[in-house]
Image (cartoon, rainbow, N blue to C red; front, side):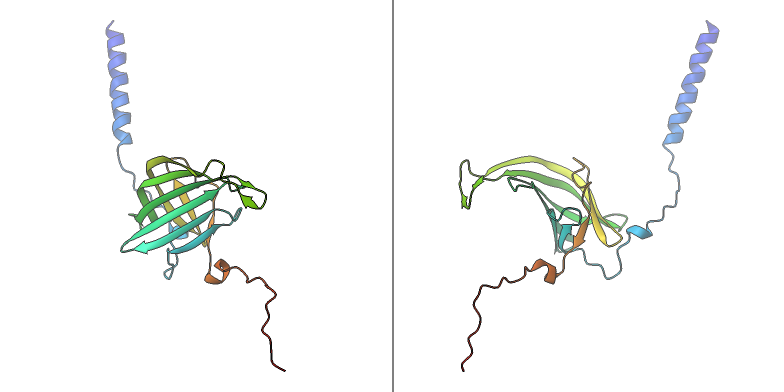
Length: 180
């Protein structure tokens, strides 16, 4: 009987020692230089997913914070998931972090032929308002970490220039007439 009590006590002391050791902070040096944006990097702008070219991220500066929105459309444009949040520079200053992110789902009216047929109208559903996550820079692209649903995993956002954002003007057949 004394052996069982001693063994149980020894196990408890060992378990306590392990749990106490887990709480200690290890000083590990991690090289974050790859995640450091260039000195002249500006977060605000429009970004397009480099993988499929449909997902759009916009970042606008408002004081010391950043207003961010991400639109994820279905391939057939029948559905859009929208993520909006206000981010601030992360404590490690390597990226942006946010809380209170909002995920809204939009089901769009169906299109029939060349005419829009509003058969059911726009359906909107707020999925959550307590999202958390971050946006970080790596090798010229931005990556989105969505803690709630991991929705940002498949995307690599590349900043669009003004030239890329404007569409090529179509030739509408109207040429300037010159007097002869």
